[in-house]
Length: 114
Length: 114
Image 1 (cartoon, each protein chain N blue to C red):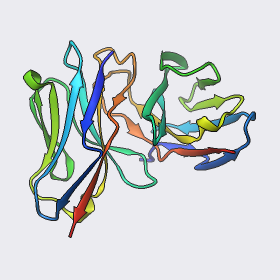
Image 2 (image 1 turned 90 degrees about the vertical axis):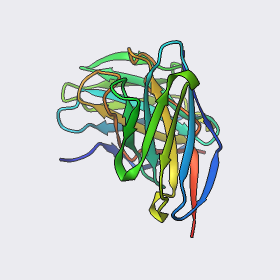
Image 3 (image 1 turned 30 degrees about the horizontal axis):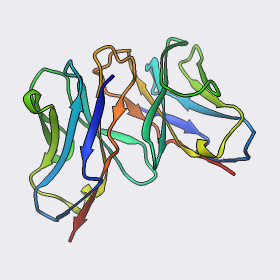
Image 4 (image 1 turned 120 degrees about the horizontal axis):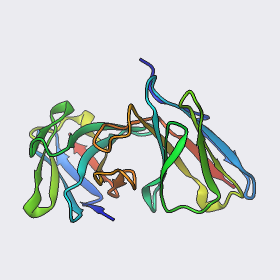
């Protein structure tokens, strides 16, 4: 079984600053990896996904993530934070067979300071 | 194209009762998964249905069950409700069964057990 760990339950950045949200996975076989965003009282929306085609993945709203097998990481970044980025972000993994559905990290609450 | 629809949005039940939640997938989506989201445990996989068959199951007691109909709509049932079942229940749907495809989430049903 795999696990997904997100470092930092809360991250605060200034508007216009770099956003970095950390995610590490634990799996003997690199899984499929996803980043989702959740706004208050909403479901989850996919930002981007890694499915082994390319290690640098670009997503919506200016976000991107890089898969690093040597570090078992899939950190999410955005060069310049916007107030509308304030939300809860979840990293999730799925093994190749999907037997356990998506395994989610605990989430990181992103706070944008004006 | 309509998104994933979950009904009802909010529900209050008493301990010991049972509850049924409904999920209508995006047209053409055949895979429906259910997740429980709580502040303490985060997002946890309940089960997945594909073409009316339960394909995968998470680590939840037998009080949690589900089914899928021929039109791909799905219901989940929780019997003998406990206070700890209070949570946001999210449904996620996909066109097929591939683990690398995007899951589209509904807005969830917030269940409160009193």
